[in-house]
Image 1 (tube, helix red, strand yellow):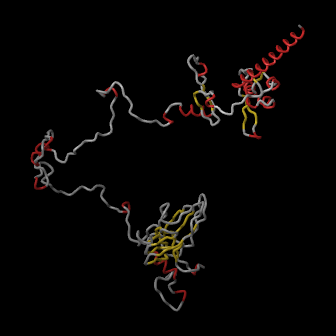
Image 2 (image 1 turned 180 degrees about the horizontal axis):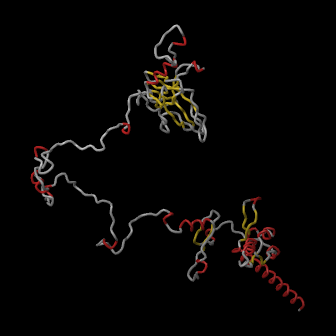
Length: 431
């Protein structure tokens, strides 16, 4: 009779070491009693939905609840291990810039496979990165759960939810699929039964209405007719007020509206007034509308003054002795006044515009030069930028140059008077 030797079964003890039950053969036998992916190859997972549940804490630690799991390696059978009470497992502090992945696992090292250490629950900590890589697990380990640790996280309870929770495995119970059952009927006709028959009326005592029509049923049950009314006073529990639901009305459907709507006292923000922001920006930039300059003025005039502090004032400057002090004559010489040049010129910036746009017209200006007035000692007519020794001539007070003409005219008349006196003296001497 031919035979072939197979792996020793469970719990066989013999002096011959080759015939004893080995750890591997025991694990394979245990694996056959669990769900299998192949004979002796157990399906890895936890032995119940409430086994070895991983949770976050208020610090950089995880808790793992009690329970058991099935770990395994190809051809090695079932490694069954677990804990009977909750344990706490630490992890590293979070990175300051990038996220990382933590994988919480359970493993049973096997010395016969050159493993070291004892059974343990641990955390495989991934390297931080913009797209963090998945850390590897020890050989034969079962991943219980997975957690993404955000940058600067201070607890494992915050942030993204746990994922990749271990599947549930269990005993190798007989499971039949519907398709594997043979000889089942194609239809399932219900057996003969009655409910006072399926026709006619079902009595009130048996849960029916005792009627075969809707109106008769309502009458039998003491219900009102389908079409009926109730007086307002009979309705209880009604609200005291009835806020209208959201709706709208067309303007024409509103009656009794006033012909005019005088606004109540109110204010507007700058952004609600059309053009106001632009007008203020133009004023701040020194830009003014040209409309006032085109308007003839025939009544009593006032002047607009732009102060050194940027304020624009409408009014006049008093020029009576009552408001002045330190009054003294100005000693301008004829040579100073005659040194004021009267020139034609064009502004450089205007010429530049014409270079960019040949159709642009550049005006020929008439005026004088601020530096020439300064050099002639006529500082009163010069607009300066800065103060003291650092002051630089930048403009001309053209509105004051009329006073220079008055002073020059006075000089001329003084000389004419002197000539006339001299002429009279000469004529008197000759006679």
